[in-house]
Amino acid sequence: MITLAIDIGGTKLAAALVDVHGRLSCRATLPTPASRTPDALEAALRDLLTPLYPRAQRFAIASTGIIQDGVLTAINPENLGGLAHFPLVACVASITGLPGVALNDAQAAAWAEYQPLAARVRDMVFLTVSTGVGGGLVRDGRLVTGQGGLAGHFGHTLADPLGPRCGCGRTGCVEAIASGRGIAAAAEGELAGCDAKTLFALSEQGHAGASALVDRSATALARLIADVKAATDCQCVVLGGSIGLAPGYLARVRTALLREPAMYHTELLTAHYQHDAGLLGAAWWANGRKA
Image: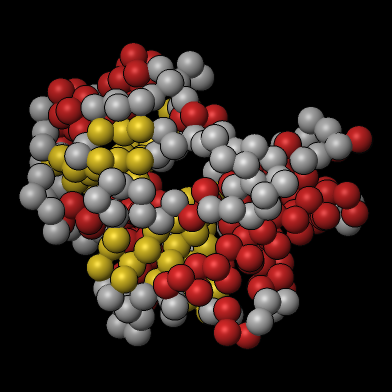
């Protein structure tokens, strides 16, 4: 069976065909619509999927936000605004004429990243640090999605009660500090206006101010990992996303985690499937679901 896998993020939309052996083909990407309205998203999905769906037998969606019964709601409107109660599965089914399923993108990535570890790990947490901070939890070898689709949204736990306001409505979320958007928002002086990619490049060149911003992100994430270890007693944490996979970032997180008491330490791993994890995880999760 060929699955049309779709990854909906705050920056881009991606799609590919996934065969039964996990091989991806016919990749396609588009920018996430700037207006981020239901009509704009539907139009972009139609453009993205029309060349692909005739070769598939079903679809599987990994999307930012909360997915409940096939309906998408953006938890942080700054990442994917304008979407509340968007009938995502129904929309894609209408475009493609195929049956399908949907889940949160970080949950999907967690399921993909668990597969190479399944022989030795039962409890794993995946964290993605990118435009936002998301996560997924595998407990006793099973992906936890939650009745309301909220499970794994670790980026919206508290990092600093006096910190910046998060787009989700809380104050001081991990996402507001550690994400690419959070890193850029904290830049001041000569760094003001720089995006996260630029700040990482400057940090690699030895710029003290840029390096401090990257360290601030890594420290917030390490504290989150300590909290996650306390809450789940996970055997390992896998790190992905554009920030999480940036050169040197995992080492900074490891250094910061070592400052926490030893009982909160856990094995830290870089994502095996990297930027394909959402697409693969959605397709593999659909294998165990009735589409």
